[in-house]
Length: 220
Ligand code: URA
Image 1 (cartoon, rainbow, N blue to C red):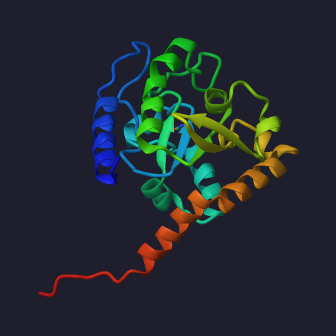
Image 2 (image 1 turned 180 degrees about the vertical axis):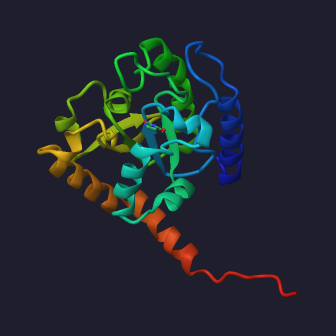
């Protein structure tokens, strides 16, 4: 498939995704990161209450932490949003949990949203997947304790293609996992593995080339 064809499929996909009404219990609007054709795909959990208003995933406190991690390995927030496709297990705000925090999407909502991720993988054919947090990790690798999967490169096969998976903990301030051992060390190892991955290095190099390219302005 040509790049132009994949991009037009992704633009159409994003349009359909934004119009999704599959889950009656979910808040609207649908949150997407837009049609970024990339070899690297991030999968978050679900947007919080701020993301629908701000119109992009990871737009609030968890995002600040997440983008600090990625900035430490070469892509700041704006570069990351330009270069990486941002998906999620669920694309709508699930509402608040009466006991505090955001409601975790239920199995039916996760199943309803799953075909969007499957289609994204089919269109993008990513080389590197970055599931963020337990729910996203379970979606890609099956239920696994964080300490068993964070810090190493896992491999899955989709549509006959090999995809590397580097799992990250959820950056939410409510979680202490990534700030205490062994989480702190495992997070550092995961970030190092992302930094060394050829698909990530290609994005960092593309950003550096774009920054070095001459810019032209119209003369009066
Ligand atoms: N957590 C997520 O997984 N996604 C968001 O967009 C915000 C917080």
